[in-house]
Image (tube, rainbow, N blue to C red; front, side, top):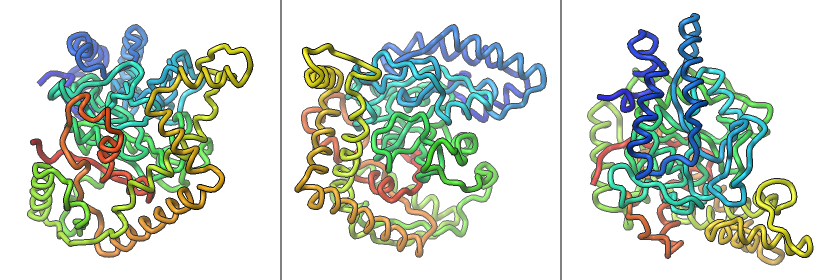
Length: 444
C-alpha cells in the first residue's frame, strides 16, 4: 500500500518511528495530485511551494523534539473555511478574489498541532447542494466511478480523502454535507454536536445548523481529528463551554451492551434495496458484537425535509445579504447603487444560491413568516423532542445516510426537488443539533 492510502494515525506513527518523513508524504501526495486530480477536481487551490516548505519545517520540528499530535500530517480544508492569505471562494464567483486576513479557529487548531494544509477543496456554491455540481468551477467526480457524483456539499473534501490526496479533510455540515459525500465515496464523516466545534472563520450558510467536522479513512482518525477540533471558543457565541473527552480512549470499549435504535421511518419506501440490505447487515454485525437492537419511532421525521428547506434558506437569505459589491468580493459597476447591487448579485451567484435566497426571503416576508418560518420552527421543536424520547430507549440510532448510492453527474441537476430528497435522512440531525457519524458498510 502506498503512503497516500494509509490512515492518518498510521502515518503519524510511521513519522514518529522515522520510517518516513512529512516531506516524503507530501511529495507522494503531490505526485498523485498530478496524476489524478485533473480527472477528479477535488481541489480549488493547492499552493505547492508553501506545502513543501511546511513539510520541511515539520520534519525539522520533529528532529528538534516536537511531538505535536498532528505534526507533519497533510490535510485538506473545504473552501468555505478561512486560511489566512489563501483564497476562500466558497466555489462562488462573488468571492472569487476574496483572501481572508485571518485563520478560522479550526484552521488555527490544526496548525498549532502541526498539521499541514495541502489546499482548499471544491464544494457546492456556499455549501448549497448535494452533489458538488453547483460549484462555479465545475463538479468534483467520484473516484470509484468518475461518471458519478461524490455527493455534496463537501464533495471535494470527501474525494481528497478517498483518493489519497490528503490524509484527512475538514468539511461543513448544514443538512448532511459531510455525511452524504462520505457515504457516496466510502469514507468516514463526522457531524459533531452543534456547538462542539467552533464556527468562527466558517463562511455562514445557515447559522443555527452549520457545523465543521472531519472526513477520514477510519473511526480512529475521526477520533483523533475531533480531539484536535473540539473545545470552547470565545470567538463563537454558539460554542459550547464543555470539557472535551478523550475520544480515542473510548474506541477499545466496543459496542457490547449498547442499545442501538432502528427508527422504522428510515426503512420505508424510497430507500434503495441495496442501501437497506447493507445497513441491516451492519446492524446484525453490531448485534453479533454485543449490541442490542431496539425499534424506535420518530413520527414527525417525515416533515423534517420541508422544515429544513424553509429554515436553512431563510437563514441563508440573511447571511448572504452581505455580498452586495460594497465591501469585498465581486463588484459589478452600475449607474446607481441599486443597479450595482442587482448586477453584482445576478452575476456573482449561481442558480441554486439564487433559488434558496428567494425561498428564504419569501418565507421571512410579511404575511408569510407565521405560515412558513414559524411553523417550520415548531416542527423543529417536535423533531428534537422525538429524538429525546427515542434516546430514552437507546444509546444511539442506526440509520441509512442516503436513500441511494452515488448517482450520475447531471442526473438530478434539472430537478431541484429530486436533489433535495437526497438529504431526507440527514437534515433532521441538524435541526435537532445532534451529532451523527457515517461509517461505510457496503457498496451496490
